Image (cartoon, rainbow, N blue to C red; front, side, top):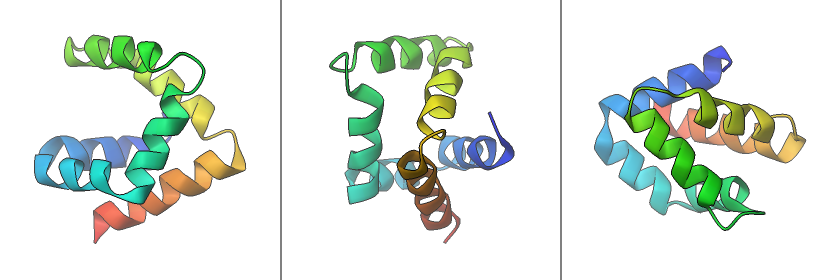
Length: 85
């Protein structure tokens, strides 16, 4: 996970209200669509469960793959800027 993604994850973990707001925003919805495409969310659900149990490796890999596309990287950057406001 790169520094920007790690910082974003830490900020959202400390602020559940910001996480709820993000997930209701257009960028949050776009993030969910990108993370769930292809398997109807099964991979994201499994990764989230593992992360909740202290193993963030799967979710980290998903975000890293997402950020390899220009659209995904731009989306994560917009989300990061929004969370820092």
